[in-house]
Structures are given as structure tokens and as C-alpha cells.
Image 1 (cartoon, protein in one colour):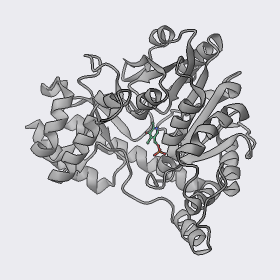
Image 2: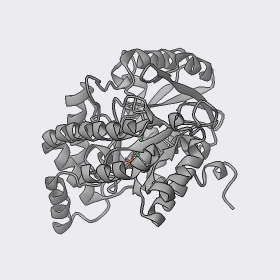
Image 3: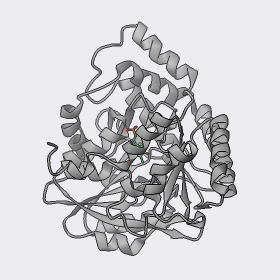
Image 4: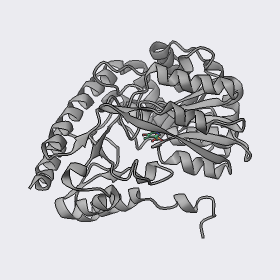
Length: 386
Ligand SMILES: *Cc1c(COP(=O)(O)O)cnc(C)c1O
């Protein structure tokens, strides 16, 4: 009964693998959520807010404490300066910020450029707006992924209204270098398009890789909506507190859609996140170091059983190529794995337009788990090497 425009997005192998993993008790390295809590002071601040009676609707744009904390945090890390009253909007996770941006700013005649493989909500959101999706792609370059600039140029047209950018990039683990972002920016200028920039992993970059926001490139602050979220930054994916910043006229478009999607959410949780953004910078830095160790732990495990890996520069994820084990169809392999060895991972299928040879052999593993959980996964994965 689902409407035609959403039918292709209604069920994905993602949910299939998740259900399967739960049924057979597999270690789930498919879904990307951490298994430890965020800072204790953040949780205390939310509990205190609840006890002190902050339990009714917040203002439509978000509680002022959080909007101010978002602006200060953003200025500290990017140098961008936004007005907390007109250029910041608190949303129900980054997911609602993305949906609000597309539904509130893209006309049905417009085209939206996405970069394959992409976060699975992008395609569904463009479909909800009734707009047309044009896919560019990432490409393996040496030991990691980069933007395929030719495909990006080919995807832009005079009808392009927006490009959805994601760095650090889920699922490939790439951190887009400034040169790649400059190419996107040049096309935005040429075709008078806006950038909707999903930066939920902005603090999770490893080694020498540095996160750059496309909003900081020359002339881009005027045409970029920058989206982030407490979920990945502060280990509270279940709180669903996200935000978007940008020029007032673009934020107003997001707000027009958002106010009829959820109106608002989570007053005490917003106050908890406001506290953490203002006081837990050190915790966020420590989280990054811990995640890098987890990445290294999973790299050792997966290379040990013979998988070919792309280098993860940021995010929660490792991209693995199981062809050295004789596996060519990652989707059916991922559907077998939970039952066969008790570990779950997801193929790239939900993140692509065309499940072509380019993607059909790739698998995403999440490493945002406690060391003991990864160790257990490692023991089980050894069965693959035999
Ligand atoms: C997790 C994730 C989101 C969703 O964030 P929420 O705050 O949970 O809505 C959006 N984009 C990417 C790339 C993600 O990995």
C-alpha cells in the first residue's frame, strides 16, 4: 500500500540483516551505533532538566541554551559565525535536518545530486520531495576513497538545486580533502546550487586527516546548510538531537518543513546536549582516540582473515572487499554470515542507486563497539579463514 515514490525505499537489506542478527544472536557490526554511554554530565544535565520541570514543548527553533552552544562549538571548530536566533535550527537528529532541507528547499522540478554510496535516507528524502535524484560517485583511489570529479560534473545540470555532501563519509570512511570540496563548491557556483552538508562525524577523523566543512570554502557560507548531530558526537544516537546552521533564508526553508514534521522534540535532552557541547570538549577528543584504537583493532581482525580493506580516515566504518575469500556477491554473503559464523555486516546495496559491479562486492563493518565485543567478533570471524 506504500506510495509509489517511497516503494523502492520501503524495506532494505539493512533491516533484513539487523533482524537476522537479532534472531540468531550475532555480533552486530552492521548498524552504526555505539554500545557505551555519552558523558555522565550530559546525562545528569538531562535528568536534572526533567526533574526541574523542563518537560513541555521547547521553542520551535530549539532551546536557546542549545542554539547558543551550537554556535559557540561551531565557531571554535570551523571559524563560522552564526546568529543563534535566525541561523540555527535544532532538529530531530541529522535525519530530520536533511529531510527538512530537501522538502523545504527543493521543488518537484528540481534535481538533487547525491554521491554514491550515500547515507540511505538521502534517496528516500529526495523521493518524498518529488524531486529527481542524480548520482555522482566516490571511487577507490589507492588505499582509500575519493570523489570521482568527472561523475560529479556529469551529475550537475541547470536544474540542480542542491548537492548532498557527506564528510567524513559513511559508508566508505573517507574524509574529503579540500581539493574535492573545492570541486563541489565550483559546481555549486556555476549552477547556482546549494550544498546540504552532512557532517555528523565531524569529530571522528583519524591519523593526520582533518575535517573540512564545505561551508568554510570561499563563497560557500552563503549557500551551505551545515548539519551535525549529538548522536555520533556524544554517543547518544537514541536521543535524536541534531541541528542545522546556515544563512537565515535557507534555515527558514528547513524550518518551514520541520515545523510540520515533528514541530519540536526533547526539551530535557536538548538541555543535556547544550551542557555537553559547552563542557565536554575533552570527552569528545578522547572519544576520537578511542575510536581510532577500535578501528585499528578491527583492521587487524579483518585483514587477519583475508579481507581487503580500504583505509578508514573517519567515521565508524571500515569498507571491506571479501573477494580474496572467493565472495563476489556481498549481499548474499551478508545474509548468510549471521547464521554461519555469528557476525553481521551490511553490503553497500542500500547506499547505492545501481547495485552494479562497482559496489556489489563491498561490505561495511562498524567498529564503534567495546573492545571485548570486537574481540568476540574476531574469534567468530576466524571461521572464515579456515
Ligand atoms: C547516523 C547518520 C545520520 C543520522 O543522524 P541522526 O542524528 O541519528 O539522525 C545522518 N547522516 C549520516 C552520514 C549518518 O551516519
